[in-house]
Image (cartoon, rainbow, N blue to C red; front, top):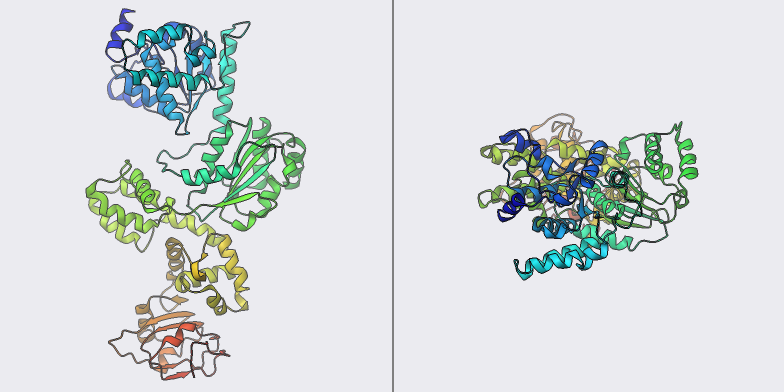
Length: 629
């Protein structure tokens, strides 16, 4: 008691989830501090004199035996460490927080402070509190009656009103949660009870919770919007689709929603990277996770469908299908609603909006890129390991978020790479990324491009190089039937989140997707390049490069203060030309003998200085309305 009293006066505790001294810490100095700092799965809060040698020890050893990383201070605090901050850090690291309420629990100020911190952590939706009522009734803790009432009379003489109110509020909040009531059990076999708790904790940890980044930036608006659509628990099965471009954060948002819902389900399953995994492997994992059995023999897709329909039809499940690419993925894993029990929730993430159609999917949500404030915060977490950059780093940080254009993946990759780079080299690195993004970003974005058909790839590249900001109804006339029905292809690109049609019917593409497309085209040398969007490169192509050229689309910009003369020879080897855009002061334009040239852009009517225009021996059948003859 004397030891405990001394520790209370110096800010320690008397055996709360901590209260014992660190007698088991055998190493010293830096090694001990390093070994202590790792994530825990469970934090035990208890008053040492009440339960340390009995029930808490049973529970700790039971949790440890099944591989659950559990914090209790007498095993885990490093020798000589400051108890308060380290205990709070352990609470923040742990996924499940278990206060063990005994008659003397509330007599420990440190127990009460831990409980307040638990409630604060739970409000961030990252942790779950699972209380145990060891030898007190839940109502005694919740209402602070009996022994708890007596203890608080003493506390009120020593502590201010705000502290007392925080403690009482935390007790009331935690005691109102569903937990284990050992006091009410007719036979108190504490070892068996510890095993029961361990089994439930194991299910919570191993079946439901999905890890998300430690550097997460608030996605509350997206999560709240989807949770509002999901609504209150219902007996009806719901299928929710989340779509958006690659790297925009669909999986992170889906995991957070999954974690929010998981406490309401006994059967949970997360199928990751579906696009890269065989269907039979996915079916095996689904059946194994829900029925909690070793993987069954599934010979083929149809065999798996039959087994899912037969064995899971009465199971109420929470299922997350991540990165779905094809209709047959959904058909083989979800099929119809009656494959699972009533009240099931199924979440699907995909780049393709078109596979999320009703009635198969109840509702869809598109994830958009981040605004500048959240972009800066996410970049800072990865580059500086803090929420915002120092003043001296602000200019470079703003350059970085402009390059990333709100794409979380790009912000994470750029921030992480700069974190490992000497600051003297940052300016050069950022300059390079203005033209060529890190390969990790581009490889993720290119997944969507690789999934396109050849016709869709062609039109994607045309838009990336030339047609961003154009009216959709105008640009569809640029493509002929050999590149598929333009309207259908435009729809496919929208479904893949590669383009959008925005206000005034304009075609929009994210800057990083634009850079991806232009990078693909730029891999060829200038004579082999199919599209030339840089006006200076276009002029050089006509004036300096002789011989056959494969260019199909060409943009020229003629300076108001210079005269440009192009001979027939400059254009004679442009036999593949489909599109030509010329700015302003052109006077003579001879496009004769370009048989593949079928249409002219409407903007050609803006060439106010044009006095001679030859389109003989081309495939042009009519002039744009903007051209007056």
